[in-house]
Length: 425
Image (cartoon, rainbow, N blue to C red; front, side):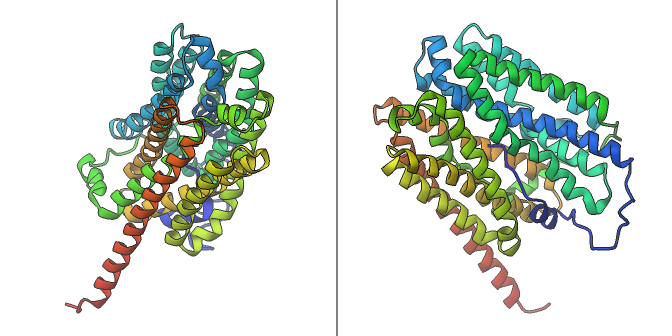
């Protein structure tokens, strides 16, 4: 899952919030209309990325049938995309620090289009998997750099809002894009769905070229200095909690289409609407997360991962009951959004003066969870344990993530207490 975040919480953690009255509303680097159109162009890209990431979950049965493969073999399309994000996010962020931002966004959008076209036209499953990997490479970098570019187009007191509007494209993708891809796949074949993703990528390419103004190349940061951030215990614990804890949700969501039809007993035509429920849950979770995370980052993270585990356990026990299964899918979206928002804000807080590499690693961590959940889910399904087994596996993963989160919270509090009790030198 591409992480989403709320405006208020992110602003507070990243230092983008400006004291009220310190900046005049009209104090913007570019005309307001230019900024709005540029942000819209970047949001289109986020919409395409969100659709590309999650569309495969609703298409697995059709991909498997098209290539004469099993569901679990086809599920590697989810894992390979996620691995592309894990590799691409930090690597591209590190290697392109001096590159002009609009040009970099165009290169990333072009790479996304190439991968999407390859996925659409692939004559064999291995070639499709390679194409999915390529499609995932620009994911994290485009979202991270796009959000930063958006923040530079507006006055300081509007930066967090601009970033949130770009990321809003991901939320809309889960409500509109992913269900639309599933419906297209059911009606016209899975290649049509990936073709739609490629068209969105082309639209992004044109929109960024036309609507996003050129920017000054950034000064290359010290890569060694940035990477030192990853040695901080709290940064490591936060990334591990997300990498493992959120893997539980992906173990289930990867196989949501066959689970809903084979276990819950819903018709294939209902699957897109189930995906809509997940997107609605994500939106509700984002709305709830803002005030909760503003009140307490630590409690919100613990509540989020614990809620994920509880919902997965209920799903494992009662997924054969349609109403309960659908409610669980919606609640997975709610709990997942709360957990991801809390972890993102926590990571920004703990990364100090090196937020860029932490932001890239955040995308990498959550897509590692995507790959881990999809892979382990395929293992248990392949072992003949049925479509309840990914939820049971997911419950175990979230319990491990909860344990890591508890360790992170306790060690941080002890460190703060120790610092407070230390005598003043």
